[in-house]
Image (tube, rainbow, N blue to C red):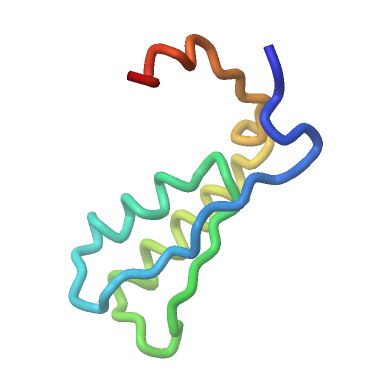
Length: 83
C-alpha cells in the first residue's frame, strides 16, 4: 500500500464549459473534482444565473466538506485495469 502524493493536494485539470451547456453537465465537471482541488476557468461576468448558482453551490460544498474529502486514497488491484 502506498499513498498517492503524500502531504500534497492533487489538482484537477482546469474546468471550463460552454455558456449553452446544461447546468447538469456543468455540475458533473465539478462533482468529478471533489476529491481534488477544483480549478475553474470561467469568465464570471458572463455566467448565466443557473451556472453561477451551481458554481457557488459546488464550491461551497467543497469548502464545507473538505475535511471529509481530504482523505488518503489507496489503490488496490491496479493490475485489474491494465489489460
